[in-house]
Amino acid sequence: MRPVIQRNTKHRPAPAFSPVKRSPIKMLLISGLLSLTTTVSGCGDSSDHVQELTPVRITAPSHWNSGNITWQQCPVVSESDQRLLDDFFRRHPAFSGSPEFTGEPVGFSSGTANRRFIWLRETPNGTAWSCIDFVSGKFLTSNGEGIPWQS
Image (cartoon, rainbow, N blue to C red):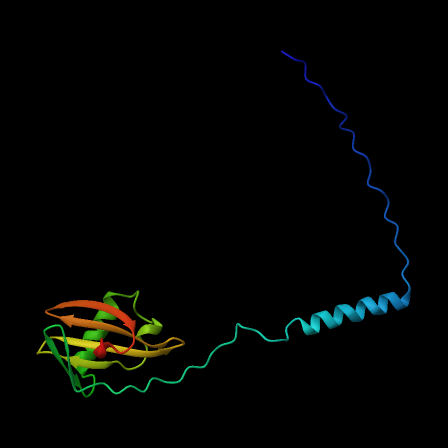
């Protein structure tokens, strides 16, 4: 076994600080440069600007086919439809307050209990949609780009 070698662990004091004398002209230049840099740093062309989107103005058809189901447009979301949506959002809080489901949806029905609610929104890439289907007592959510009744 080798003996432990101790090194000199004596701490030396830090060198004394001696202030450097600066001329008033240099100080004025440095101060002016610092002020100019601070003022200009927030200006200029920025690619992180918010793009204003035009509102969606798409007319829903009176009826359309999806697979083997024909959907008829409902002129307004009825009270029973609103209760159905309220119940859905209460049971599935992850969807509640989502920007994909804001505003008034376009409602469709394909029978007495089947409902489809579609929210349209404009994005930088075009139109996007989100949908909640209530079919045969079950629900399904979906989303996509473009117009849902044209796909």
